[in-house]
Length: 244
Image 1 (spheres, rainbow, N blue to C red):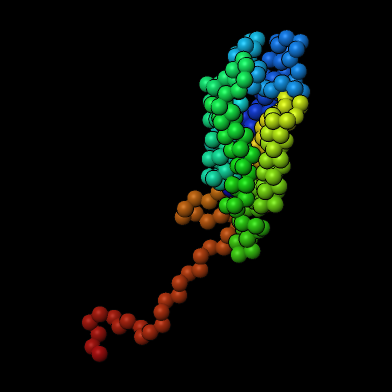
Image 2 (image 1 turned 90 degrees about the vertical axis):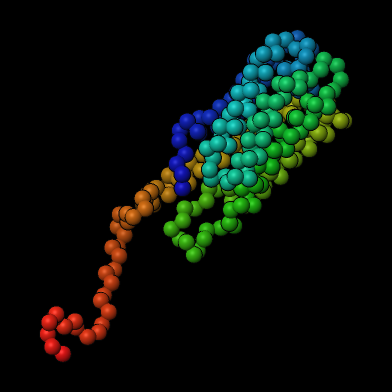
């Protein structure tokens, strides 16, 4: 099992912090008519907003946090890491499709949907790859992190998709669009951190159990030496030059 460094945890922890600080600071720069319960985060980086660079910069940093987490979270498996990276790229791409001052934008809506769906589905990718429980045939294998166990991962994906459904409902018929978007964005930003902490805890528990990296050709500490091969039985060889 690969180690999870402190900087990897810090990168994952920076994502929700950057998000909340971004919408708080950028929202404070808007006119009093801006309502965070009604108005969306996208409006803070959209056309006509005050100091759009604040939210634009935070979106870029947020996407970079997702990309960095996807690069180092090996316990999640390639399918999940790919989806997380797609979510990071789409988050950064949002700044190229700002929301217009009036009306909507097909480009902005498409990129935002891709970002949220990728970030909501990536936990399920790890659940499809990993086994359901401990492998009895290989008891020395490290226990999988709790965040990547199938029941947990599928439940988290269902919850995140539920938040996305709430946001979609508010966009069409509700009046709490900003609140729903913030809840969805914060949910998808927090789960990579929890997954990273889960992988780190599993690695530390594995090390505490006596596991260690073993180089090829070397045996682990405490392992029994290989048994010597006994010579095959047969007639003893005769000395050279002796007549039969």
